[in-house]
Length: 115
Image 1 (cartoon, rainbow, N blue to C red):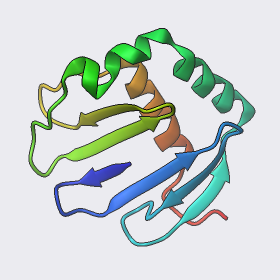
Image 2 (cartoon, rainbow, N blue to C red):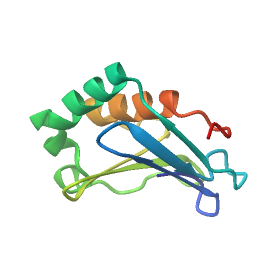
Image 3 (tube, one colour):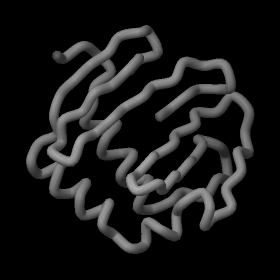
């Protein structure tokens, strides 16, 4: 999920294990989109999700607290119950694995109607 500021629209993106994705309010304009990751993207995503280092990037492990007002906030919800939040704030430490996951899925899912 992504939101810009406290009152911004929520972009909700679900990616299934087979790579099919569904994006609700993708560009903050109420438009929903669907599509699928390429087999290479699915393989890369599965490798990152299986990385044991991901457990060290959870909100709980980092004792994460939101630090900025009106920043782009991204939250990854990874079964079975891992939550990893980040904000585009000056000086915020980036989570290497979760950051790569976020980059992969945001680049692979356009904010326009595709299906």
